[in-house]
Image 1 (cartoon, rainbow, N blue to C red):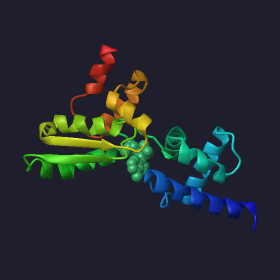
Image 2: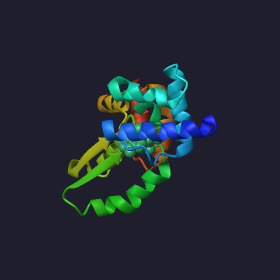
Image 3: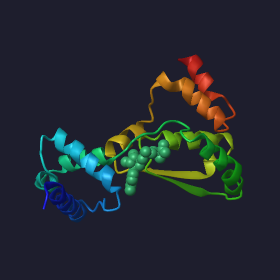
Amino acid sequence: MDIAKIAEIEVDILLDAIKRRYDYDFSQYARSSLKRRINGLLIKEKLDMPYQLIPRILYDEQVFEKFLSEMSVTVTEMFRDESFFQQLQESVFPKLATYPFFKIWHAGCATGEEVYSLAILLQEAGLLGRAKIYATDYNNKSIDIAKQGIYSAENLKSHEKSYLKAGGQKNIFRLLHQKI
Ligand SMILES: C[S@@+](CC[C@H](N)C(=O)[O-])C[C@H]1O[C@@H](n2cnc3c(N)ncnc32)[C@H](O)[C@@H]1O
């Protein structure tokens, strides 16, 4: 059996170990990305083969945190998918407006930009007071940033464009820009 096939077995055992030790299930993660990301961690940890990660992850929660960070693709930005936010306002907000109270869950919120984007639009629609918003992510570093809700002013211009395209009505980004 060649070494690549053996590495596949090692990856399976590693995932099983993670599932049993930490109850995180990565078995459905796209296999090619999974292998690429495990390789990334091996390089950072100066290791050669996936099996070497098993004892480290089992005995050291900090190494598991590193694994989680490595597996987490944190690409996000304010009003990232403009058409999604537009559609949400056109089709979903009117329905939400018929409820006295509703809950929203951002599963995989990364550093929180999507959460605040939606909160801004809900506020503009007069619906924020009826909403309880949950935001979760397995990447604890991202969650810490999301909790703080402090973002760089560098990209305000492009965020402003996305905000307007997404149907934002108050031009808040221009206001923020003027303040800075
Ligand atoms: C590409 S980001 C997208 C962030 C945001 N939803 C957006 O669209 O702008 C995906 C995030 O989902 C998180 N994630 C992926 N699968 C997850 C899961 N099963 N449970 C919790 N978080 C998950 C990742 O850690 C990452 O931060």
